[in-house]
Image (cartoon, rainbow, N blue to C red):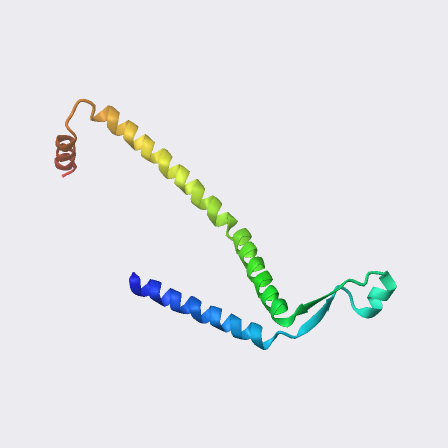
Length: 122
């Protein structure tokens, strides 16, 4: 377990180092515009912002990861519903088994009841 934790920390340090190198190599500012120039002039909306390139790259990656998580969460909804239904059914059956065993073996020792049931099944 400690080896896996150490590998995880080494990996996280390597990723952090790579992100710092990426940020240092891409510090130049870039301009992000909401609309192409011709469409912005036509619509009257000329929104633009100037950011360092590494923020644009990391923002794109973060947005993609977030969309991926949301997509997977929505896609797995039916599996979570089925698991919850199966869990409820299992709990219901366990309660039913306990109720049936309780009425059949009432007043008997549990071990003796199991031994008698096993010998009766032969």
